[in-house]
Length: 107
Image 1 (cartoon, rainbow, N blue to C red):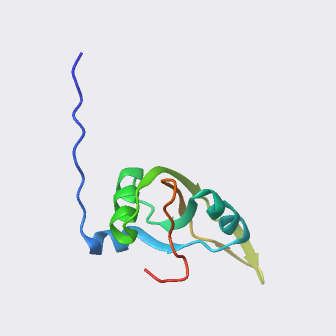
Image 2 (image 1 turned 120 degrees about the horizontal axis):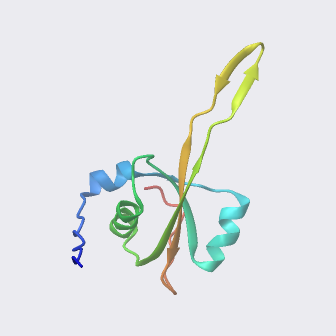
């Protein structure tokens, strides 16, 4: 069998800011923050490794796990005109025990 070597991905601060759009502030996201999980809206093309590195660079915390979720935009009817909401990608980031992110401060 061949051994697969994993590349070390290194991104700049500007790239990290373009990957992480903004934190999602909802009732559910504030509840899961008690367990060390935080929710961010991220770029659709970003993968979990890039999201992990971007969070670690921007907030200087240790990330254990990143789960992503794509929410497809609904088709809506407004005054007889059909339109579609845009698709969004959310990342649920689990931090190491004792780490925390202050959501009130902007990126």
